[in-house]
Length: 370
Image (cartoon, rainbow, N blue to C red; front, side, top):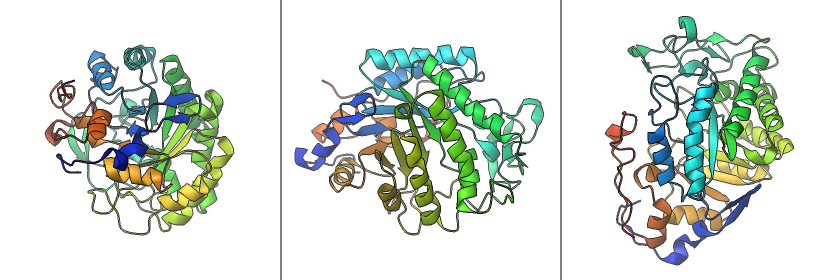
């Protein structure tokens, strides 16, 4: 979207229709997508600066928090927050209190990085885990600097239920921390995605081979998370064609249509698909998968990937989605709904500060003068 694009109210009006998401009333259909920002410090405890950041963006229909590790084993990003200690729960309470006092709504995204980690992140320097022992191509940004990714260790059958329970425990902690719900991060080449796609899953047991087997881990996690809270408090994010973290699948339409169908059994509050529009930096070649997922999934459908005010509104009008998630536009524009409503200039994002510590490029983007 051009930073100076002027649009008529009619062209964006669908974004500002209220929406009922389970037990939550959304004032608009603009969702703040999960955005890793690396401001939690070495102990991964959410802090007052993070609370201010989310508070500034409370006008979103719903905020989905940055990816948040469910366990020490799940860590794989420097200074990203966690939700597996009492101190982290207390830290997150600052954010949820601030967002709620401003009239906002916020879900926590549950994250296990799997092979996208490194021994430098792991307790005792052990290997990270995954579906299979296949390394990501490239370098990890570890606490000790850039290092090549290592081949992970394939999770043993008797370990998988323990990881599933880590998701359930994190869900209960998210509820304690005051979140309105959780989003299971099953996208972007992290642990659940590593099980889902056949490029990273070469298992020959009940969790590998067929699409149904590769989806088993996701479905077990979903069942555990739903039981830990409530279906109307749980969403899931998928990225059917993303190649990030060396990911690919031989038949994403078949894989993710099956997943969308199977998820219907849980009564989830939404399914969130990251599939960038053609021409976007994250766009991938191949048939659009989200349209198949939309038809297969019986609940609220959310899309993400390069939408602006007009294309987002059109997607809702055309029935392609019920909700539209915005990432970088929310990062640089804390009052993005008001800017889209007025059709005024957007702040330009400063990519150099996306993951750097401190206020710059985080809480210092200006809001409109009222």
